[in-house]
Amino acid sequence: MRSVARTPDGDRTVILSRPHPGTDPHRFMAEADASRYLLGSWVLPAAELAGPGQGVWHAAPYVPVLPLPTALAVHGSPLPEHTVRALGVALAEALGVVHGQGLVHAGVSPGAVLLAHDGPRLTGFGAVRAAAPEGTDRRGLPGVDPCALPPEQAAGGKPRPLGDVYALGATLAYAATGSTAPEREALPAYLRSVVARCLARDPAERPALSEVVEGMGAVPEGAPDTHGFGAPDRATALMGPGWLPARTVAALAHQSAEVLAAASPASAPLPA
Image (tube, rainbow, N blue to C red):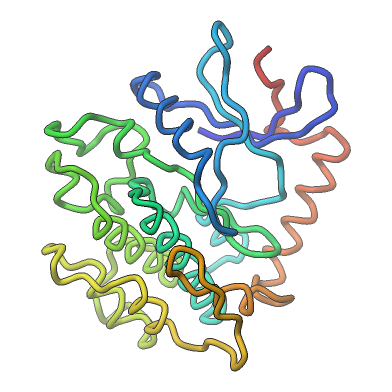
């Protein structure tokens, strides 16, 4: 669960995350601690963790963002093609960096994707692991989006990289249609093949993240091809002005103004 909060001294505004009711607090904090070491432009790792006696929470510096479901609601419909393509490239590259670090995200879902003016921020690292240990049925558990949960993880399997690919496919389907499990015919033609492969029940049939990036297409000529853990940074070239719909940009500006005026209805003090 996320909210915008201010530190007790009022000097900093942060994005505060707390566990869902029923989530094991020790697993939640362990995943938050591990997230501090995530690399890449499109992830939002924890920057501050609750200390002894401070409750259960972690925080990251505030940036105006909208969760993906909120962005669709503000836009009034699924997101336009150029936005979904840019989002797909950015998230695939973010997961490529995570996997290159020897990690599995295990928390990709529409609600874990935050949209900012300069690109997405992927949150929710370790949500599946925090919800329940391996060998435990994870269906219906708090903090886990059932529609983005790979079938092998739903049955209690260990989260592995190809599970992130499944969750990415569900998230892109949601961005383009408003559903994480649309009928194949309901998917736009430019997404149909890549999402169908991502959502294969057999992990071995899912594509590599590099194939997802290529499948999204529309990579501008001259896009940077820098390498960090083997992942090219093509998304940066897609995140210029206009990557988000106008209503989403306006909602981000409104949120920023509210926070600056300390008037955000979501505002809450950071636990002391």
